[in-house]
Image 1 (cartoon, helix red, strand yellow):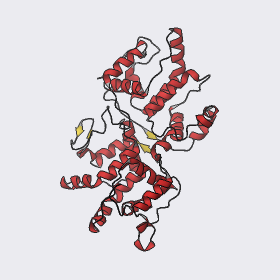
Image 2 (cartoon, rainbow, N blue to C red):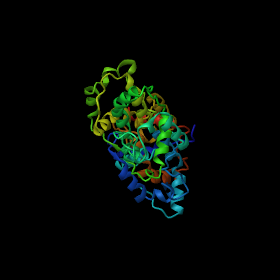
Image 3 (cartoon, rainbow, N blue to C red):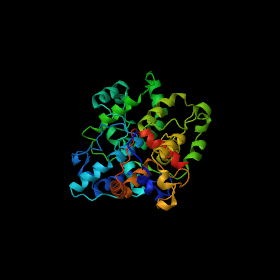
Image 4 (tube, rainbow, N blue to C red):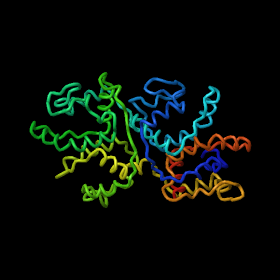
Length: 367
């Protein structure tokens, strides 16, 4: 257990967060924030920046979930703030919208993907017959776009869309050449992407990703016929929480042989569907409200947030108000002041002994 008696103080900031948990986010705005908020003073961006913390835009990544990242930020916040103060760096204050932009940037930078290997990727690109049709700057098959024109290398949603739309044509091409359908694992595709993104011709490609929570995804999921299969035991609810968009792209590719008449999807449609079936699960965590209630009680959060005289607000903001994104925003908006007050009272800063505690607390707050 983490050494807390008053985690409630660090959560006061959440009273101001009335927005839905999954907010619109844009990776390009997130990259600009990464620069303007001086994160780059400690963290590197494609090798440019500080060396005191990891390069967040490396193409070979850690495989963190959003909940792991949120928990780590909370655990290490006092040390981060002390290091910033020592270097004379102003501490940023992130709104929920800005935090969502940063998380979109982390998705675009593949920070949540599992580690990949370019050497294995080069071998897989050939072994899975990708190179039979697709070249790097020009292709052996005229109808097959070369790698340098693959928008999907820079946008994980475009990757999922292209893996889905391309499947029917690839199945026909495989059948004509009498080649068995090339099933992929997530590691295969991760390795291939690391190889292709590190080519001299592609390594400077702009990475992008957007959250687009407009609410149209559920209707599209029905109208495209997805609910015809994904019901009951095959329902996707709760099954995509720990999957990256690379994992989703692999699932879509491997699903192709079972499809009779798959409908193509535009990028906007893929954005909407992924927001509906994936983003909510991915960024709202997999917490248990009952366990979260015990965390809330064990850490004596109710001492402040259940006592009107304390001045601490009631944290009940409604179902879906809290996520990894809003927790990170609360940390950077109000955490420094909370730390000062806790230090004055000689109360230890809240540290999550495992990410599940963060997920459980979020689930309880959303209840």
